[in-house]
Amino acid sequence: MVKPLMFLPVVAFAVLAGGLGWVVIHRGTAEVPSAFQDRSAPAVRLGALGPEAPFTDATLRDGTVKLVNFWASWCPPCREEHAELMSLQANGVPVYGVDWKDQPTKAMDFLNDMGNPFTALGQDPKNEMGLDWGIAGVPETFVIDGDGKVLLHHSGPLTDDFIEDQIEPLLGGTSGNPGPDG
Image 1: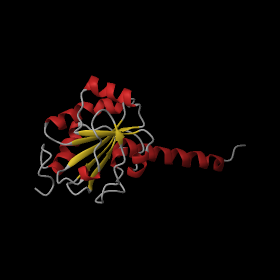
Image 2: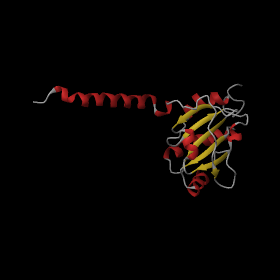
Image 3: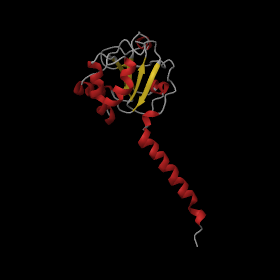
Image 4: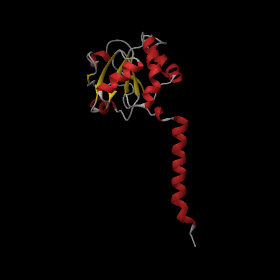
């Protein structure tokens, strides 16, 4: 005869798994707060991608609100959010790109095919900067204020609704200036 207590671990596991699934579906993984929220952004450590020099720590502290976007050519969600990045750029929002764990030729082909939304960019092929910034996967986007402080960290592709609800208020509307302080 099978004892009812033998099923207790299975039932407990099912309840926990169901609860976790509900949280992921209803809250999403992008809701996880960043350890860098309201703190200075970690150091910028990038190699060049293409003919231009990569952006630097000084770039993050230039007085304007900006986005730093970690992406890769092999990343389907990065393709999904690319139109939103192009739209932000067209509206005057500075967007700085970090090509993460990618091959430079494939990254440049991606940008040549889909358009380049980045004010400046660099590559992080060995995840050195990504580790400092707490990157778990791509795409991940940070909103940085003019003093280099992290205002927002978003994991996953940007959507029109997220940009309108969460990012635009930090930008002062659809322009990269004057920023959250008006």
